[in-house]
Length: 69
Image (cartoon, rainbow, N blue to C red; front, top):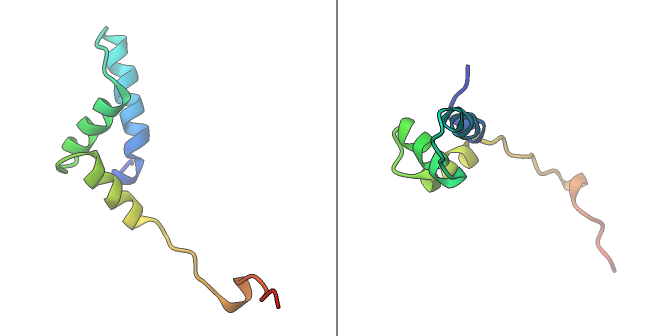
């Protein structure tokens, strides 16, 4: 089952479905519609929510580049 993290795929599917019914919707409008469907004010808010839900890489001392002395 899809959730808010799949918003871009959902927007793409919505746009394709509407085109099948001869309704032309821009990509940005379809993103806005998906954001509204999830209850967010706009795509920017939903996009921030998606970014916040991404797993973060764990930084370790071994992952740092060597000191160029």
